[in-house]
Amino acid sequence: MASASRTFSRALRTAAPSFRSTTTRSARFAVPAQNAFRSRRGYATGNEEAKDKYEGNPTGMFVGAGILLVGAAGYAAYTYKPELLGLEGKPRAPFVPRFENYQEVYNHIAKLLEEHNDYDDGSYGPVLLRLAWHASGTYDKLTGTGGSNGATMRFAPEGDHGANAGLKAARDFLEPVKAAFPWITYSDLWILGGVAAIQEMQGPKIPYRAGRSDRDVAFCTPDGRLPDASKDRSHIRAIFGRMGFDDRAMVALSGAHALGRCHTDRSGYDGPWTFSPTTLTNDYFKLLIEEKWAYKKWNGPKQFEDVKTKSLMMLPTDMEIVKDKSFRKYAELYAKDNDAFFKDFSNAVVTLFELGVPFEHPEDQRWVFKSSFD
Ligand code: HEM
Image (cartoon, rainbow, N blue to C red):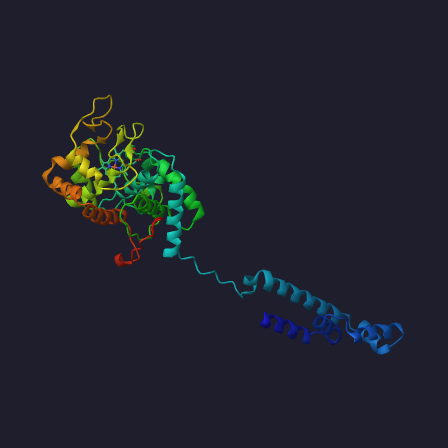
C-alpha cells in the first residue's frame, strides 16, 4: 500500500505545473487548495497570470485528470484485485489436511452413526465396515490392481456387482460427510468410515493413513474378486491369498462377522451371526465353536442356523473356519482370548485397508483416532 501511494504521488509530482499547484494539495489534505480559488477569483476579476495558467495550458489539465483517473483505477485494483498489479497474484498454498482435519471427519461420522440409530439392528456401522472391506478386497497382488485406492465402486460396473448389493446404503450415508469435508477423497473417506465403524462399535483402534486418490471408471475391477459365501476353504484361500493374506489373517478378518447381518434382498442369506450385531467382540468365534449348527430348512441358499435358538446364522464359508484344521486353530485362540483377536484383527484390517495404495507417508506415521467414548 505504501509503495502504491508513493508511485501515485510521484506521478502527480511529474504532472503539468497547473495541476500540481491545485490538485496535489486537495488530494492530500482533502480540502480545496486556496491558491486555486484565489487564481479562479483572480481570473474572474481579470488577473492575467491566472488567466494564462488555465487558458494557455489546457493539455496540462487533461493529462492531470488522466493521471488522476489511472491512479484511482490503480488504487481500486490494489484494494480489490491486487493480483492484477502482480502484488498478491501468487496462488494461495494448497490446503494440506492434517491429523486434526481427519479427526474432524471421524467425529462427524461418529455423530451420524449415533444419530441414525434406526437402521437395521440400530447402526450403520456394519454396512460401513462392509463398504470399506469390499473397496479394499478387490486387490490382486500379482497385477497390483484393485484395492482401496480409487473408490471405483462409485461406478456402475463395480457398484452393480452382486457382492456389492446393498452397499449403496453405506455410500449414501457418507455423502453428507463428503459434502461437509469436500477435500477428502471418496477412497480415503470410505476407509475412514470403516475405521470409525470398528472403533465406534467398541472394536480395537485401527491406525489410519490418508493418501488414496479417486480414480475413474476405467479402474473398475472385474466381477468375481470378492469371496462367494457358498464356496469352500480352497476358494477362501484363493481369494485372500490373492490379496496376500495367510490363514491366521483370514480367520482374524472373518471375525468381522460378529457384526451386522445377512439380508435376503442383498445376498439372499438371512440373519445375524451373533446376539450383539452392533458391538465387536470375539462372540463369532465363541458361537462357531461352542454352538451346534445345522442346515436351515428354508427356501433360500444353503446356510446354517444355531440349533438352540434358530435365530443366528453361519454361511458355508464361516463353517469352513471350524472344519479346516489350520483355520480352526486360530478360531479357538480367538474364542478364548479377545485381546489376541483384537490385536490380530486390527493388524489385518490395517493391511486390508491399505491394499494397492501408493502412500507418501511411511508406515510409522499412521494416525490413531480418538473414539467418541475415549
Ligand atoms: C470368506 C469371506 C467372506 C464372505 C464369503 C462374506 C460374505 C458376506 C455376506 C454374504 C454378507 C451378507 C451381506 C448382506 O446380505 O447384506 C456379509 C456381511 C458382512 N460382512 Fe462379510 N464375508 C466375508 C468376509 C468378510 C470380511 C473379511 C469382513 C470385514 C473385515 C466382512 C464384513 C462383513 C460385515 C460387517 C457384514 C455385515 C453387513 C451388514 O450388516 O450390512 N466380511 N458378508
